[in-house]
Image (cartoon, rainbow, N blue to C red):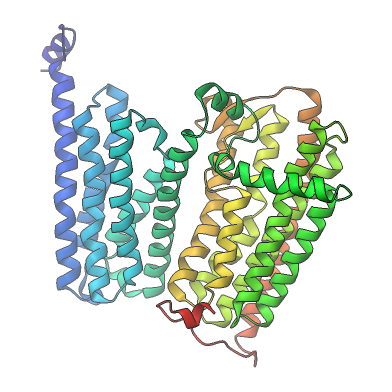
Length: 479
């Protein structure tokens, strides 16, 4: 039989083996799609304590078929029909379980609603991109697949006896929804950023360290703001902006802990600090263009370390607030975000030390992390928002660090590699920066451990508790 298939495989045109493989893999995707309704029915008709390990094993076996893409690429069994079936199956497998978890009250409606809305918007965007011949512009790489894996894990976990652990289910759903929003935003940012510049300019920019799609979208307003500051206040230096921004963010962190019930002023102060700090690099580049300054390793170190200090401080503050609201899910997520905030920068410096340029993640950079932290301050009273925003902060750090680590290990073979810069000065400065960032990462770990210990001790003390986070947003909660 095998010899016959091999002879057919050598015949002109599509081989029988290839056709059989395509049919089999497409059939697996169709079955996976149909099984989503079975999962939903099991969740709808059973209580968490009635669910069995047999149902879990069956669901896990079906979910594993989502990895059919690897053998398809390995043996050349890919097809347009198979790709469409796989994409649809991923959505159909998770939608019914999340809907029934919402209906049963086991999960907040925000997880199901965000899943459905995101899928509809992305389907529309991909259709538009396909019509325009720009399908490649509306892609987010491995984040989309990781999102699907997490969503499937939650759906599979929900039919097991472990579904009785509500906090564990909440943690998984928050992480899945966070990746759902990250990948969804990534689709739109990549699509619109790709349309802003011609192909040659885009290639030239991607071979530098400043290659984030988000940078293209915010470059114009940042440049205009920096030009205004430079012309009206020529005495202002980039380091002045860095220090002023850091002081404002640290003040916002302290104010957030002191008075989390009224977050408007805190959010405004934090936003002002972040906006001020974002302009330091742009101002330095403008000075270099005019020949009135040059980039120094001291300035680069100050900027990088200041960013890490700001992130550690605000994430620790948000962790303290969440713990005081008895929201352990968000408190732990923010604590991990604080401890890991330096890791993306460490791995980037390690890559640049080897002369490798890493791809800046769509939402893993400084600007999106600042936006997420500001939203965390503004909506610190709401459990759903806090769960998801804290998960986004944590996952952004971990995923970005993982991508950059892959570049260090695999070099030009990594999908996150963007080019090379083997100048001795570039690699030497990266080595200096790496040493400083490693120390900052250790300091963040120590600070996180101290805060965690204080939180655990505080459970048995008379520390005043805040009101528990409500599940729904209202104008009164925001203000």
